[in-house]
Image (cartoon, rainbow, N blue to C red; front, side, top):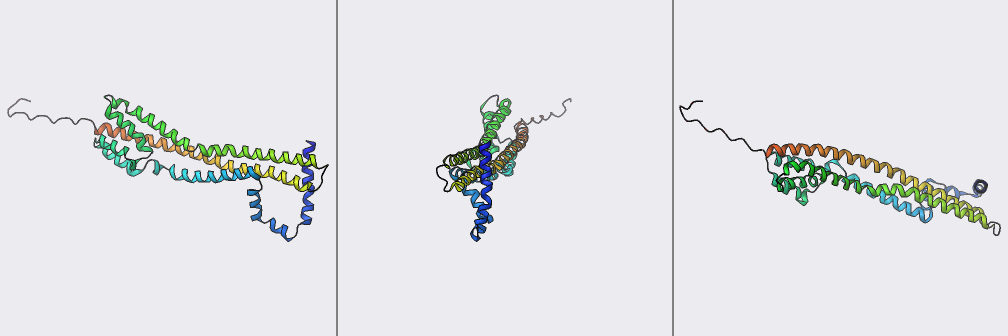
Length: 260
């Protein structure tokens, strides 16, 4: 702790000297633009890795924000078309509609296995709901896996920041160890290493906090869409049972004069 305290005190002591020696160029360097650039480029190689992860995270967030939407996963036009087909008992047509590549979505990928088992098995009507539950669980897990990359970035970024902190502190202690033999540039080297340690920690937290928040948001959105889709599927199953039920035959006319 004594060595670390001395390092921090020496860094603070360096600040007045740097301020006294700074002129117009120093004022320009402290502008908001240059400060932001320092936070981006001042973390060394590990800092550049964190910046690259932040760019990848932004791209993933945009992609998932477009894909994980209720209207994209359960399109109203496709839902209405399936309601019409199943309500009229056109089960085979509904299955063909679901397996068409143009109609591929979260809803049709769940409904298609259920309709397939309904048509091909003698006990398909009893197995229909089990097939829908299995397909629904599989498709929901698939959506969860698609968001895992954001969660991984949110977990790895602070660890990379910690790695940069360790690297910077190692460099700072190396500077102290060699200062007795060569005092030239001692303060500059010491401050640079401590700066790397702090900047990488800052970068890692800046990337991790939004990633973890957005990852949780997408997970909750998937849960909500899955719950709503389950209700829509229950409605389709009820229509299927009603539309495929045999229509009772009309009673035959009685001959004239027959007793009731």
